[in-house]
Image 1 (cartoon, chains in turn brown, cyan):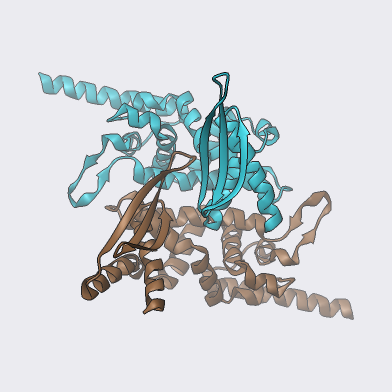
Image 2 (image 1 turned 180 degrees about the vertical axis):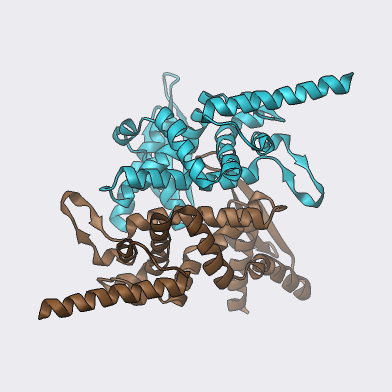
Length: 241
Length: 241
């Protein structure tokens, strides 16, 4: 009797999950078990002999790489006349942890997740991780091209405003410039280049107002570092005033 | 007359490049021009109206993501019982800048590259970048699945010893770099050279995170001091978290 109702519960959960995948990503999954694994947060880890942990971390590792390529390819083709710095910046706007967490909330993934400890869910970036793990699951279940098309159609086109994201980048720097001109302050963005271990360059930009260092930020593009720095400075400024 | 010999030179270069691609990756390219672009180092940039720079940076951006996914997928399937931490570490051993530069040298990519300033070639990671750009070119020319199969067959299976990589001492330096990139911390290895009585140099490396000195170590090689310092920092970090 118990077993029967357990089975009913078990399969009704699978059925509901299948429907939700269809609602979010527009297709019915083949292998529902990978998707269930993708929704198992590490706070609900099942331990196996040999030390393997049964949770969504392996799928998140895979999905992170899938998402990285899908977005890189999408931007590469959408912006054929933009340089690498712009593309890198746009990608990080699309796949950064905060954005993916928001996306995950919007999609309601939490309702389908196995979570052991709800505090851990909130303090860490469990929502975004689960989204990435789902991407990994789609990739394993349906292959790369299907995943790419699905993500472009059901995620990038529906949940992102790419035009808006492009504009967002300039806002803080120009906000600062406008403010300084209006209030007759002297504004400088001081840039330093730092060599990193891998031979890459990282840029440090300090926003300086009337010789006073207000905020410092780092990025792999000058533009990015300027904007981050300006954003921090803006935050300080609006609290000060 | 000049034009004729130029044409002959031009097409013989293309022919040679096609052959080299065949030798390295086992197939003849469809669109040779993408591969030529992949081999144009930024020191040989052609500038276009509108600010677009014609060099391999866009392709490197794309290829980096392709390579990331191919290696992630390969390791995911090759090590079904390993946790995400192991996979991440193995991947960084395979695709880190130093390894890709070595690979690029081994493949002789430099012979086919357009380089404007040979100093820039050496100081930067031009070789590894060109390899990544070539991967991007294959992806555009032949699609994801072809690229994946090609890279596994002609690069991972032929030029890497995965068993050996597993055993190789973990580079704490690369662990730290990865952690910092993932968690968005600023990481620096600050190096000081100390002259000793006998004329030997001793190196002091401090691992600095977000301007906070975390660990210091001494050694007679820079590499050794860096790794020791990173190891100490890693130990502190894993206790902190």
